[in-house]
Each structure stands twice: as C-alpha cells, then as structure tokens.
Image 1 (cartoon, rainbow, N blue to C red):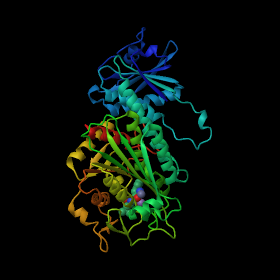
Image 2 (cartoon, rainbow, N blue to C red):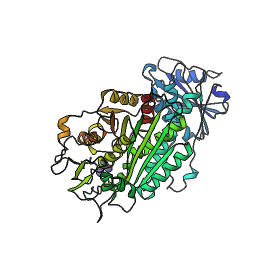
Image 3 (tube, rainbow, N blue to C red):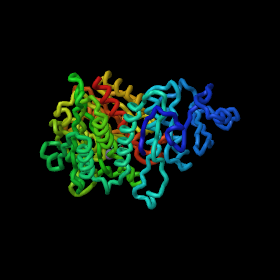
Image 4 (cartoon, rainbow, N blue to C red):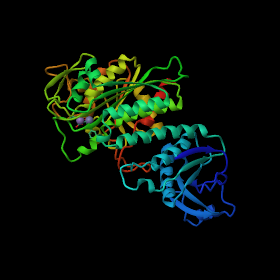
Length: 481
Ligand code: BES
Ligand code: MN
Ligand code: ZN
C-alpha cells in the first residue's frame, strides 16, 4: 500500500473513502455541506463509542464515521485499533484510496498509530494460496491534517513495512526458509538499505569456537548461519553507545533428541521471529537514517534430531570458554544466543538487547499481551519498558536473582542449559544468558507469547506478528539520545 501525508482536505485528495473519527462529547470537526455526518450521529446510527462504525455516501464518495471514545484515553494504540477496524470495513467495501482525516489536537504518536494500524491490518500472508492475486486490496492511504505530518507518517510507514516483512519471514515455512535463505535475505536487505552484512557459515561458526551454537546446528543437514548487520548512522552523536540487537532465529525447533510432542510442533517454524525482528529493525533504522550506532547479530539454525545431533548429557564449550552440559536439547535457544551475545560483546557492544521465542513459561505467565523482560541493569530495563509503551510492543519485567542463577549451575560443567525441575523456566533461561552479557547493560525480551497468534484489532488472529521490530527501533533511537 502506498502511504502519503497531505495538508489538503480529505475531499481534495481524490480518495474514494474518507474516515472521520469522532470523540465522546464532541461533534464532527468538518461536516459535509448538507450536515449529514452530524445528522447520522444525532440519529444514533453513527456512535462515538470506540470502534463503532457507520457508512454513508456523498457525491460519489464513501464516508466512514468511526467512534474514537474518550479523547483523554485515545493514544497510539487506540489509533492502531481504530485504523485497523476502519481498514477492515474499507477493504470489504472495495476501497482503492482511503483517506484518514486526522482528528484535531492529537499528537504525532496518534498520527503514526493510524498508519501502523492500517498497514498492519492490511497485511496478508497468502503467497501459497490459490487465487491470491485476485483479492481486493486498498491501494493507497492518504493521511490528511491541517498541519504538516509527513515526518511521522513516513517514519511509521517505513517501520510498519519492516514489521510486515518480519511477519513474512515468520510465516514462511521452514522448508522455504532454512538458515542459508534467511542469511541471503538479510544480505540482500543490507545491500538495498546500504548497511554492512557479515555472514558466517556453520564451518566458520565451529571454527571460531562457538561450541554452544554449533552443538545445536550439528543435528541438521541445513548449514547454520551467523548473520551480523552493522549500521552506523551518519548523524549519530559521538557519545551514543553502540547498541547490539541479538536475535534467536531457530528456523525450525523440533526439540532435537529431547523431541517435542507432535501436537503443536508445526508452530516451531516461528522460532526464528526474534531474529527476523532484529534483521528488519536494522533495515528500518537504516531506511530512517536514524542517528544511532547499531549492530544486529542473528543466530540462524535448525534444531533437529539425527545421528550427528547433540545428545542430552553432552558437554560443550561456548565462545567465551564457558562449559555447558546440554541436559535438554530443546533448551537450544539459549545455546545459540549465548554465543551470539559473546560475539556482540567482542564486537564492542555497549548495550545489549536480545529478542527470542525462548520459553513456553513466558506464555503461561504473560500470555500474548506482554513480552517478558529480564535485565541486569535498572536504567536500561526502564528505557526498554518505556519504549514498549511508546511502540505498543509491551514488555513486563520479571526479576533476576542469585538464587535463580544457582539453579543453572552445572554438576559436571559450569552451567546446565536446563534445570532439573520446571520452575521459573523463563527466568532461569535469562540467568543463563546473563552469564554471557557480563557487565554490559543487557535486556532479554522473551517473545514466545507475542510472536504469533495474537489477538489485536489490527492483527490477524493467526500467524506472525512482527513483534519486536517497533520496540527495537524505539530502543535504538532512545539509547542514542
Ligand atoms: N522455542 C521454544 C520455546 C517456545 C515454546 C516458543 C512455545 C514458542 C512457544 C524453546 O526452544 C523451548 O523449547 N524451550 C523449552 C525450554 C525447556 C526445555 C527448559 C520450554 O520453554 O519448554
Ligand atoms: Mn526448544
Ligand atoms: Zn526454540
């Protein structure tokens, strides 16, 4: 979908459908010459309650009147939801060009939210479906306001397109997106947006001493990849810390020899969503020409059982020398991330955020509303939490504690990758990673519950959400300030 901002009035944009919002206790800002929008409200057919819709026609155009509820409660998330609902109706009606009339006296965040909600709702993953090119789609979104809003509109369009590409990566089945294909995709994206990409194949990963990552990779015939992307914003303040975004990209997680039950194993094609978010966040930062210095590190591998696979009880040596007993081959994400975090620290990371579909425990704890946040640094955690609120990618902090760290101390090696009892699995996973971040301010975001199959008015109920793209872009921008 094309997106543009304008200071022209909605009627001058050539749009065939115009969306007008109305708040509780307020009238329509610009009624039609015959007063029909206000009349529709008076008649009770249109309502001011949040997301209520009414449609009328005037001089060959459609008008969607949508309730925005309480003005004081209407934020970017409200705008995403309203825009998602309005887009849904427009698509049904066969709209080609959709114009949102921005309500008076709202900020840039709401403007961005209207763009995000529209584009996220318009997303479909139907490339494997028959007749997918015959479906009708809204082709253009015009955002009209009295004042200049092209900044927030363009920025939201760039970030949301990146998020939708992350959804494509997530939804693509594992047979069509093995680690090598993900790395090729990342390298092409890097080329397009003008950032540096470095890709290590499985031989190089092993050679370098990434024994934890390599242990996961060896069970599969598909060669693993470490993908590093580097963006140095031209206008980054010299004092801006170098931030590393680290992503888990297990392109398929069968559990390995500690194999998963069959029931929902197919969902483990989504186990690369953290990595996808990192790749697309780096791409978006470059497209935005954001004044930040960012490094993306993505560990891409399959986790499969085979005659070569790592076995429960095996002891491996991570890049930083840490020895690990692999007691459960299904706790593979932390093995991959451990070496990716060490790699980022070696590359000079001064701040770390990792994003991973790491534990089923976080789904139990937080469902799909909040992702889990765990951190070794209160200031850094607060910044990430605040960016969660502004981006709408919500995160809720869980504690770390020396006694949780005790639970992953090994009997035969320094660490075990899985605790004996299933207690606090999300936190002990984070404590495992904590070892590799050391003293670098680090935040771990567990997105197992938010990466796919999430219910939001602007998302499809099934499939990848692209969670993390908006959060990571915000975090990188905020960290550089
Ligand atoms: N990829 C899974 C976590 C996951 C579970 C993601 C559900 C999305 C939905 C991860 O690799 C895993 O298997 N974690 C185990 C760890 C356990 C063996 C310590 C888990 O959480 O059960
Ligand atoms: Mn697993
Ligand atoms: Zn996994």
